[in-house]
Length: 234
Image (cartoon, rainbow, N blue to C red; front, side, top):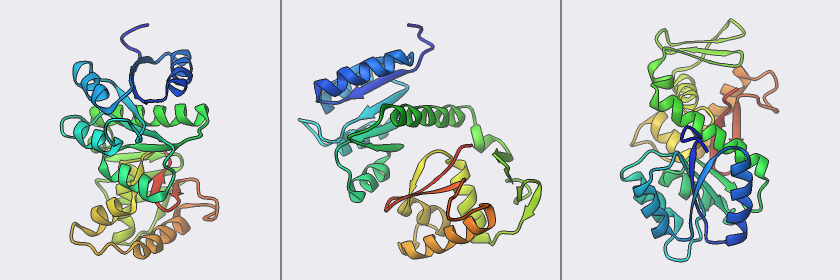
């Protein structure tokens, strides 16, 4: 395999899942290193930094949340959680700790591969300047002119309140990534904001009414039930 192909570090203690993912990832031209424990995974991440980490939370020697926190001390590498822990509180805890996405076991390999592609694209755009280095963001028919602070949908001007605009720009800067309620409240209302999810849901609903052809079937602003929101990349 070419070194140009993404290197994935799989930290998973279940051998059948490692074998299954090894086959699936290699067929998609990913390079792969494997670890059976958190400490082994951290050693691999240090010695041979990967382009992406797939991490199980239920490891034999340490909790996956601790692995995320250790990695985030020195690296922004995308981390996609693959775990049997499917409760909302587990997803929120992992995402707040620094994970980029969360896939629950049992899982479809097609969905997992799609999440990996999104995480890698997001990391590549960030390292190249991405949205932060561009004054105009285009996603489908939606265009956000950050310099002019204007929003267009199919070339028509969209009138947003200041809160709606801050919420939208936060979402589009992280398009494709799950953003938790806590993260959005902090980014939009500030670090001292009261963590009242109801306020966020009201503004998200208002934003949907202005951006979506059918707010009940959103194309752009997607809900991650009980966790937060994801803005579609395309």
